[in-house]
Structure formats: structure tokens, C-alpha cells
Image (tube, rainbow, N blue to C red; front, side, top):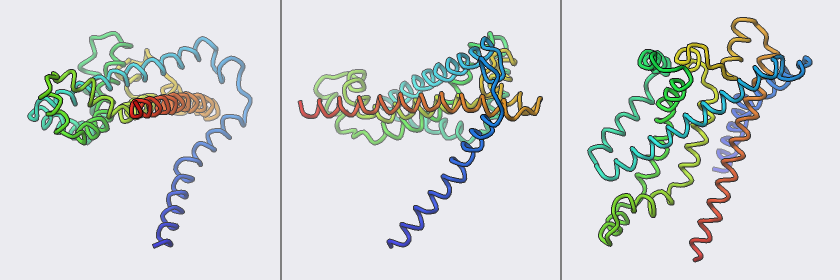
Length: 254
């Protein structure tokens, strides 16, 4: 038994080294193997700041929209079992659909919109199933007896959600927001097709540098910035988790 646990841990560590640590180390070595141009890793400072701001705005706005959709859908599912069955079927269908088909379909549906809002809306629709899966699983574990008890005491469904359900799934909501934001930061098809190439992001810049120019060092330098932004999001998530846990402990003691 102990040997199997050790072997499992060794296998997980080896997988982490191969699929996580090695690519990051290769990217870092490639990024700093050549001198970077001043003011933006081989780009002019205005162009570089545009890439960063577009990446942050699209990913955070898309994740916020996806989070809102997921919360509303899970709340409606609590009120209506029929809607919950439909919502779960929709989640499964969206998660099993190839993202390329989603991008092509959204680029057609949103063709008449301005590029930047269209990219944010498309990002919202693509990341919503990921957050929805996490939040729906957490909401499904909430005891229905507590909902019935609160309703019997006169609380409406909105009050039950605000006072009982949401506080119990706050950790999963934060995790969903983190994963959706990081997931959206790596999108390059959505800004390219839905945004018609007029909403450049760090991910699209990496793709262009590698595919069109073959400039791997510059692409790796931009990838380092992308990794840094994701680490900032991870730090915010960790801080929010600590604050939520301390608040929960205080409420429990009270």
C-alpha cells in the first residue's frame, strides 16, 4: 500500500516536471537568451501596453460575464428542476464541442458588432461552461432541506441564494473566476476571428511572431509576460481565499 502511494507521488511529480516545469523553464531560458529591446520585449512601448491592456480587459471582462451567467443559471436551476436538467445538458454539450466550431459560429453571429465588444461577448460565452461546471457542482451539493427550511420561514428564493447558497459556494466561485480568467488569457482564435485581427492580445502576438516571423525569442519574451499576468491572478485568488476563510471563521465563532 505504501509503495503504491510512493509510486503515485513519483508519477505525479514526473508528470508535473514534464508537462509544467519543463515548458516554463524552456520559455524562460529562450526569453532571456537574447537581449530584449528596451520598452516592451522587442515591441514599442505603446504597442506592448496595448497588448497587455487588451489581454487583461478581455480575459477579466469575459470571465466576469461568464461568472454572472453561471451564477444566474445555477440559481434558476435551484428554482426550477426542469431548467436544471436543460442547463446541465447544455453544459455537457458546450464542453464536448470543439472550441474551433464555437469560434467559427460566434464569428458569424457577432460579425455586425464592433470587434472589441464582440470579442468580450464571445469570450463570455466560451468560458461560461467552465465556470458553470464548477459552480453547478458546488450548488448541487447544497442541502435542499436547508432551502426548504429557509423558505418555510418566509425567505424568498433571492434571499435564500444571497444568505445561504452563495456564502457556502464562495470558494468555488473564486476558483471558477480564476480558471476562466487564465483560460481566456490564452485565447488567440477569438481575437483573430471574432475581433477580425483588430484586438491584438499577448496570445495573438505570440502566434504571429512564431507562425509568420519565426521569431521564437520575442515570442518567448511575451510568453513570460503572459505567465506573469497569470501569476498575478493566482495571487489575487489566494488573497481572496484567505480573506474568505478568515471571514467564515469569524462568522462561525459569532
